[in-house]
Image (cartoon, rainbow, N blue to C red):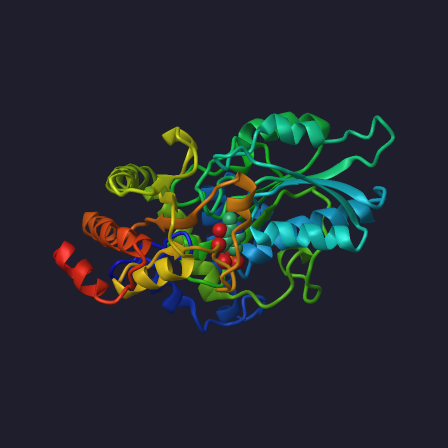
Length: 401
Ligand SMILES: Cc1ncc(COP(=O)(O)O)c(C=O)c1O
């Protein structure tokens, strides 16, 4: 994909993962007892072991889902309903953050609206990171007579500004009190070490299409022993937490993608750090573009360069980038495609028009230099009130592509 700098939205599947997908699509039902069914079941169980190895959990902790959104919903609603079914007082108490993905915030708000939970939403620092002490200050152990906290949900890294949170410190503080921690690790897995055990977390959400796997499959890790209720009832697959015929091809591809992501992770992180530095350095030379997210490189994803652009309209910026062949996330959060203001940008108190350029395994210097050349021409032009026509030529002239 020429000019593609939107890997945080989705990254192209790796060819060898597509081979695995093709090998297992159309296989027998993995719950069937005949030989073909048993073969399909072995593919599912192999993927489960690959996933467990990649995420520092046991194979029986793994629940296959349709992606990150379902995994987050299962963790948030499932753990809350599990606690209520266990006899915890209603409304139960939940702590999360203002920069979570909608797949966490919306189910949490929905639970609050129906009276199942009392919700505490922690504000981030201006750089998008969440202070562990701010989260811990909201957690209740029940000693003061108020309903105790049944779930803390904090993302491993933010999908927009790329800020990384110290979830290991959070897990270490919560574990002695037996308070479950859910980590949305969707944006982490490609470039950061993710481990249920090391983080002392109880639940994780992961999505295959963010790490070289296909869209439509993901993983909810739910530590066995944790009280959780399913979203879908039926045939009782995956410990009864996610009923439905196993999507053997997608699951096998998800396992292969995660295993591959872990093998390649250190090299990819190093390569993307060099590329994102090159991109950020190039953008720093353009007046009115300010980098957001943590200043400390160790606190931000190697894959993300998020900037605020002064004095340009979001729609014009998006159109100009498209016209010049640069695919990036301009002006709005990636959701249903609606140009809504980003809740992350608002929570961080950032001003200007947000622009996220995100890199992945297919990115190279050429795509980075092309984006810098296009923005170097586009931003001053828009700020001066010009239109975007003729930008394709600017982009083409700026690079060899
Ligand atoms: C942090 C985060 N969580 C959850 C999701 C949802 O994942 P999916 O697209 O697989 O439903 C995304 C997708 O953008 C994400 O970035």
